[in-house]
Length: 222
Ligand code: NI
Image (cartoon, rainbow, N blue to C red; front, side, top):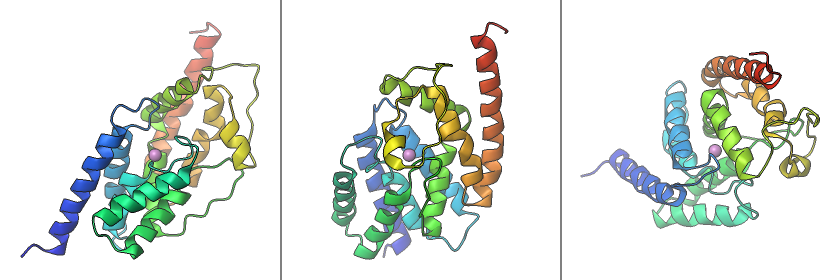
């Protein structure tokens, strides 16, 4: 007889295949391989927290971008899709609710906007998602996203803003370099778990080096 653990593994595999199909070829840095990295990092972080429910973590990591405000105008339609996908695999409403809570609260909504992630599982997936926004991969993804929105790489005449509400943050058309100060460099101190914080410190230092070098090249000094 198959154990429930085996069933869970098959189910995760089935969900990952469906998500992979949906996100393959996406060009703004939110493609399948972003989801894959967040999934693997979530699994890695969850090993430090044996009390966390790894099944919920994996499902939330796999579906976390299906209702992202950056990628769609109506995130509630994405949430409905997640619900349909999970219910199709006979998951209980309790599990579906836990996953939806995580997906709804995962994204960064502005430097001065308060965050409300309630569950340990959510904190772990959020950390994994944020780790993928910093370091070398973070730099690559940020410019890919900025390019997809036709933002300039950098414009020294446009000052950095600390957004105090989500609408302003979402509507920003500032150059990509500003995004480092409006979000990426803030993430190190917003990690929920110590395991993620220690990875974030190194990735953060790399971004600072990158920026220093960027300004030197900009002025023809290197
Ligand atoms: Ni993401």
